[in-house]
Length: 313
Ligand code: FES
View (tube, rainbow, N blue to C red):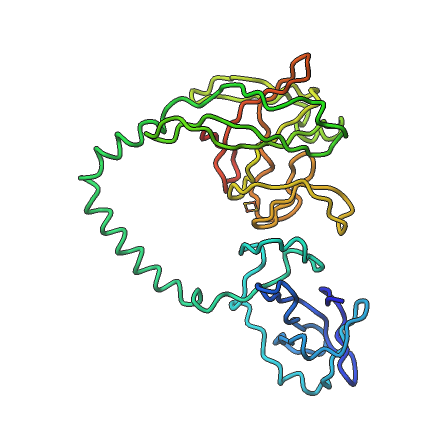
């Protein structure tokens, strides 16, 4: 059994403190230490390895040592750790027996002195860039011209609504899209979106009682999603940093949600952020459904990592 946050800490002679944080081993993804603070511990939290555990039962961690030995455990240094949201650990969601957000992993040794080193590296790069700018400007202007081309508002057929069996359940649709990258010829790339047949409460949360307008680069409206149209499509890219996310059942939450495994952003079926670093809800896209049930979308893309929805493609 893994220790839980807020568990009581029972020493060999008496109970002192509680588990204030949990530290994971980033390789094994198991708990390697607990941090003990609170009642009787003093001002300095202590870091205790799992090897000092006698046992873990329910919400109590039993230690072998007596409470008088607390000073022998190292003081907890917050700056030596990052939260699991700040790093990328594959399949971490399979190990989430503890609360996301209050779980730490050690900062790698090489990263600890990074501020000073990166300052001088960045300074050197900045001076180099300033010197090269007059020479590079005409080349950059030619290369970047396609970036200012009008947005791609083509409708793309991606499947049929008969694939969607249940209300408020995310269904992934994969499709191919022709994309033109800068001065390269047009090429086909794999894309995906998530579609819900939304219940009235979810539609209300998505549209807040108003139809949703989509615009091109000139500000002109190219499509309007009606607020009572039951199918909602979300861009397949997480608004945090653009990773692909999944529809997952999380037993701990007792519900199904969209989960981005990169930094553990969690969204409800309406796209609202429930947890994690995502700065905004999932991005809805224009959708229309033919009488045959065929679904078409406009695959718009939005800038990642910012609160506002800024269209870039
Ligand atoms: S890309 Fe960071 S949470 Fe999705």
